Image (cartoon, rainbow, N blue to C red; front, top):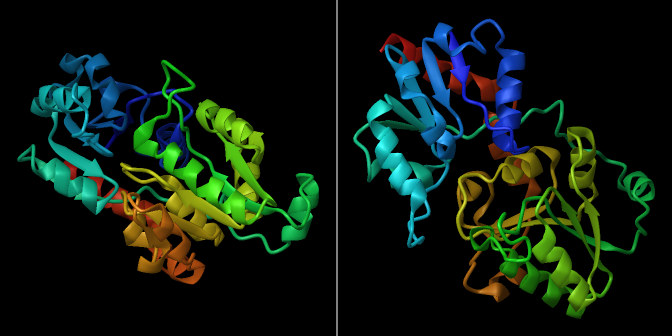
Length: 310
């Protein structure tokens, strides 16, 4: 069995998953699509760029993370229906997404969250040492957000499905109660939050692009990570926080409720419900174990083997 994964090159989680797959499964991974038995379309929004003639006589697995049915011009849905004829089986990373995909295709849909590498993400006990490393005083209350918040065509316009406006409202309310808050940001396209944090006089530190070692340190630095999304497939921050024992609360999106306790979920329509949540790190750590490496790889190998033999 030989597997080819489509490329994306957007410095996003899918790039990381592809890189780790090729690193850990070199015996079945191939960079030559002609030699592949299975083509894994891991970035479905680029399906229109795939030469479908190269898919002839191959099994096609397509990962779909979420479908934004609220969009008036739903290019994702149009692209999905157009490419569906070439797909043998679908993969998604949350039960919520699986149910949505099953409504628009009769192909098999398998739900498996992406693995989290415990060599990259793990708990660090010495928090005071981390604060000194990053120049942060011990009395600061650190709230994190490590995913993009701005639209690509207008960096000052919020990407609403990611809920940066919800995050901003929450940290603004925290700031009113405790002006020692510092917001920790990483990743690209953080323009909306940064510009508004400056307007509100809320302290922040921005680390644009960091490697996995620094990212793990930043998770461990936090007092709280907040997922404020309206729509998600993952997000991967849920499992990364869980395995590093980073306190996290989230809206009820993607796989959040599969990993986090009910008391760690808040209502995106009721900002005050955020202040009733509790970041239960013990429940999250226990539930995430099934996705931690090396165990987290096994489900994907079974999925690919099953597709190959079908």
